[in-house]
Length: 174
Image (tube, rainbow, N blue to C red; front, side, top):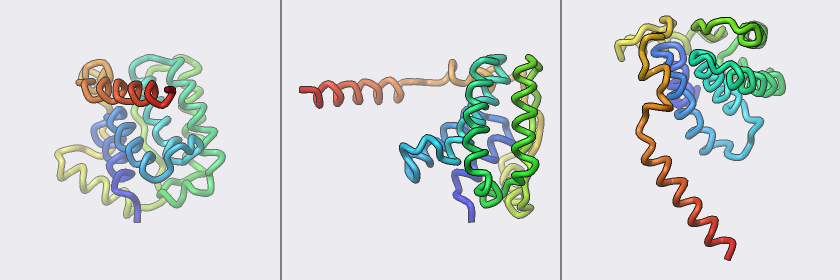
């Protein structure tokens, strides 16, 4: 019923709080199913993960900017939220509350999505248990690998891809 990538996103968002991985998983999915559509619901979820990642790292400017974009996308597609198992009447106010937290320079706290599909929650929480994760557990703020993942990861593949794209771009200009 739900794309496996979305389920993986939810598992990381609520299980290990690896928002960076949420971004990676859903960005790959978005590129396959709705590439180029920056108003896609999937982009809204990607931006929400990025905003949460920034908020946890105390990058309030980045957190605010990306959450504002996410909220706009979710408002534009509020009718689709129930189709991905979310309670739109609770989800949008929750995000507005998160935005106010950021604007008032309040410290990051973990939060969970309001779901309207208990079977989705069961699938995700069961998968968390199988992986040794706890669904809804608070973020481990002492875990540097989690909190600062973008700085600590191996970027070899990203650098190589950028080089390849630059060469292609130069070739197309000739």
